[in-house]
Image 1 (cartoon, rainbow over the protein chains, first blue to last red):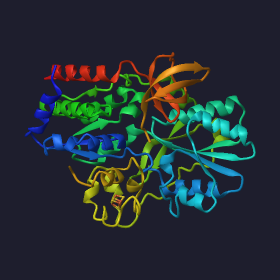
Image 2: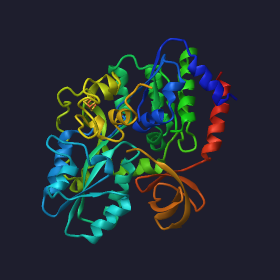
Image 3: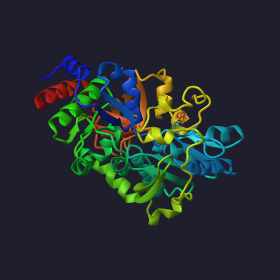
Image 4: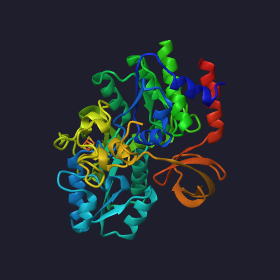
Amino acid sequence: MITLEQVIKELGSYDGRPIKIMEVCGTHTSSIFKHGIRSLISPKLELISGPGCPVCVTSALYIDKLVEYSLMEKHCVLTFADMLKVKGTTMSLTEAKAVGGKVRMLYSPLSAIKLAKEEPDTQFIIAAVGFETTTPIYALIMEEVIKSNINNIRLLTSMKTILPALTYICDNEKGIDAFLCPGHVSVITGSRIYEELVMKYQKPFVIAGFEGEHILGAVYEIVQQITEGSFHTKNLYPSVVSVEGNKKAQELVEEYFEEVDDDWREIGRIPSSGLRLREKYHSYDAGSSFAASQTDSPKGCRCRDVVLGRIHPVDCPLFHKVCTPMNAIGPCMVSTEGACGIWYKNGGKNQ
Amino acid sequence: MCVAVPGKIIEINGNTAKINVMNNITEADIRLVSAKPGDYVLLHAGCVLEVMKKDAAEELIELFQELGETV
Ligand code: SF4
């Protein structure tokens, strides 16, 4: 047994080689601020954000398509709130709404089905965006659509999987020593998906929840593994994360969706990193396209470097001066889970 | 987007459950899990993602027990 005080003392006085830890999930980025983690640990332990905000990595052309649908007669876009403010090449869904676009909130799989039944003359387009945490929701919608013979729901998909993105980072970005794995993605995938990464890249992959203790515990575990030179997957969130993950959810996703090479905004194409509806369900697809899409950052914006963990948001020259949540230049500032927005909200200091 | 919150199942009706989330009662889809009233669950986007195997306090105690063992 070790106490929290001992953990904090050890992490605060750590004086070994510098260690750079990537937190993959935006919710972790928020928790790190909320609990003042940086002020508790040695400056030799650097925490850097990664590509873990699905909204930030959704292609601008995809958002354009949603906007287009919202403005079409007898069409309505159903989306989770996170997607509303991010701009495509011309406007965001919120802006589309202001000029008459029909956009409604998706609260749950059930709410989508209910709406579709109540308004049979409206064609509902589901903005199916997200990582493994959210993909099962779209699979549940599909199951119900088919079971209840609903013909006014279609999916515009931009679903991404985390493992290929982590592989991409390990292959292309040098200098990340360890990963704080996303807790809620891991609930669905299970901890086993990180095993192959540990084997291949010889780095610690530690799964943690979102309490301060979880994060400090994870950093402590990472420091131990690196000091001892022995690497493995460690699950510090066993109340909800198992080795195998949620099998039912995995099977349901498997039934409706298949892997596809996909584009990540700011990063580019990553092999097998997306999901699309299987061939037999193509009639439910609203024209999701996986052709090369616009991935460039707006001029001067360094979102690419932010999502790849090369810089902290404060290192972008536009941060706070030109780019703020009210006048966001890049998606990382707009999204509530985007690193730039989170840093801004928390005073923009590397505290 | 991947935010999930814990809650406690009050009652189950077919594919949906009434769940107490920080004293607010909400409805959620429970098709992804096998759960019963009284279970603590993790909720995301109107859907139960997993049944919690232990409560948060217990988990944190165990976490420090386990970390202690690796030293
Ligand atoms: S601060 Fe703004 S401009 Fe700079 S990287 Fe972040 S979103 Fe882009």
